[in-house]
Length: 265
Image (cartoon, rainbow, N blue to C red; front, side, top):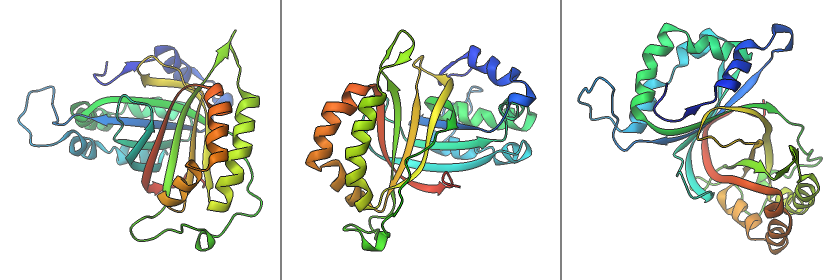
């Protein structure tokens, strides 16, 4: 039991029982919202904020012990789409297998550290993901040559899109619309220096609020100014209205500055 979300026991069973010959890497994408003040179950007095308690949690030892690696960490700077909750941080951990994710949960050192996460976390969504093939950028533009290159005040800016598509009879109803949107958006984004760090399909949400998700996408721009140039382009705005909004049933669009970004690796 956790106080910051619903556990999907069916997906948990999938993670725990996948046959070794069918198992492989899984990327756990974490969306986090913190309590203003940490609250420990044992009632101890603390001056820690929720964010500070989560920083104390950081289970790097248990992760290393099961062969997992933190590949993305960023605080949310802008939440463009998706009113609630207001997310504070995004983290992605690559586990070598689904079994290793379950093995970490059972470790004593992980369970001991987990009290800090429980104290600090107000709400979280943890999505188990697998990599998708991404559109190839044959001749990426050097960031020094774009209209809005990175600066000390406005450096690399990553857009994170968490997506649920419209469905009918268990089938996605959106591929053509997304392809139309991506064609237009890409024609604007590529000259402004976009880099596709990784697109992922969601195989399950181990902790969340009951919603299912289909994809998570990470695209990095040389600066926020570069992204805003793309976002405000009239052709992209029209394609967003005519195609992306038609394709997508639910989404978060989050602008972040990454402290760690090894997704492309």
